[in-house]
Amino acid sequence: MPELNLRPEKMRILITGAAGFLGSHLCDRLLQDGHQVVGMDNFITGSPENLAHLANNPNFSFIRHDVSNFIFVPGAQDAVLHFASPASPNANSPFGYVNLPIQTMKAGALGTHNTLGVARAQQARFLLASTSEIYGDPQEHPQRETYWGHVNPISTRSVYDEAKRFAEALTMAYHRFHGIDTRIVRIFNTYGPRMRLDDGRAVPNFLKQALNGEPLTVYGDGQQTRSFCYVSDLIDGITRLLYSDIHDPVNIGNPSEISVLELAQAINRLTGNPGGIIFKADQRGEGDPQRRRPDITRAQELLGWNPQVGLEDGLRATIAHFMPATGNAATV
Ligand code: NAD
Ligand code: UDP
Image 1 (cartoon, rainbow, N blue to C red):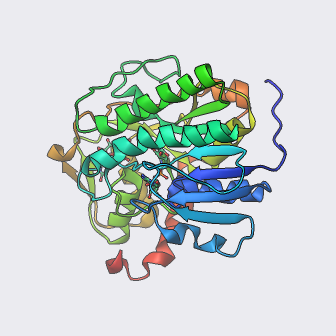
Image 2: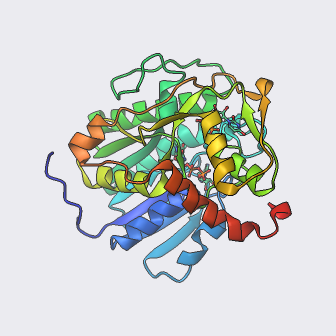
Image 3: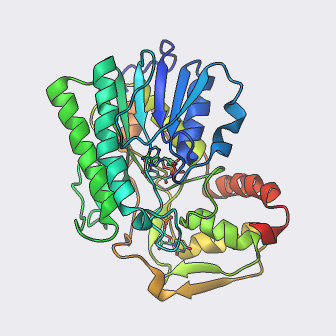
C-alpha cells in the first residue's frame, strides 16, 4: 500500500450537501479529525436537524446556498467536497430525483462546475461524491472501476446517472487541464442514522413501514441485488481517499451482496414487524439495476480500507436510531 498520512495538517474544508445523510456524517468525522468545516446546503432533500448538534461548535459554520448558483465562501479553503445532490431514485417520494429532475441535473452539472471553480480559485483539493449509478444496469459483475457502464441516457433515472457521469468527466478535465488535485469516490448503497425515512430508498422505506407495522413493499420479484454499506465504513473510506493522492475513481461500498427480498426479510425479523411483505410488481423503476456489487480491490490496495460493519449490526444500529424518534409508530 502507498504511504497514507491519516493525520494530515489541519484543513479548512467546504462540504456541499452538508445537511444530508452522508454530508452530516462527513462533517462530524472531519471535525473530529481537527479540521475546520464550512457546510453548505439548500435543504432540498436534507434537514437542518442533521447539523443541529454542531450549532455551537467553533470549528463549524454553515452557509445556506444552492450550489447550482455561483458560490462565494469567505476565507481560504484547503479542500472542497461536493456531496450536494438528491440521491433517491424512488418516484413515489417527493424527495426522489425522478421528481426533482432539473434540480438533480443542475446539482451534478452546474454544482460540480461551481465547486470545481472554488477549488481552482483556492488551489484546494477536490473530492466528488460519485455513485455506482454511473455503471447503470451493469453487464459486468462485480463492478470494477475500469467498467464503463450501461446507462440509458434518456431514461427517467438518467437525470442522476448522466449528471454524475458529466461530473466525473468535468472533474477529470479540471485535473488534467488545470492541474486541480481531485478525487472521485464511487459510492455504493449506504445506509444508517439520519437517512430521511420518507425519501423512498429501500432501507429507510422498509424501516418506516416496519416501524408502522405495515407490510414492506418489495418492488418487482425482489430478486434484484444490492450490497449495503454501513455509514461509518463509508465515511472512513472517503476520509482515507481525501487524505490520499489518488486521482482515479475509487469504489467504496460493502461487497456483501443480498437480494432486496432478503433485505426486507431481515428488517422484518430485526424489528419484529408482523406486517409481512407485499410484492409491487409494477413499482420497479425504469432501469432499476438487476445486480450491484462493488469490486473493492482498489480501495483495499491503495487505501488499506475494508468495511467492518456487517448488515445485521448496521441495521440494528439504524433501527435503534429511528425507534426513539418514532415514539408512537403511527407518527412515522
Ligand atoms: P441526501 O439527500 O441525504 O443529501 C444530499 C444533500 O444535498 C441534501 O442535504 C440536500 O439538501 C443537498 N442538496 C441537493 N441539491 C443541492 C443544491 N443544489 N444546493 C445545495 N444543497 C443541495 O443524500 P445522501 O445519501 O447523503 O447523498 C449525498 C451524496 O452522496 C449525493 O451526491 C449522492 O449522489 C451521493 N451518493 C449517496 C449514496 C448513498 O447510498 N447514500 C450512494 C451513491 C452516491
Ligand atoms: N425497493 C423496493 N421497495 C422499496 C424501495 C426500494 O423493493 O420500498 C427496491 C428498488 O426497486 C431497488 C432496490 O430496492 O431494486 C434499491 O433501491 P434504492 O431506492 O435503495 O436505491 P438504488 O440502489 O436503486 O439506487
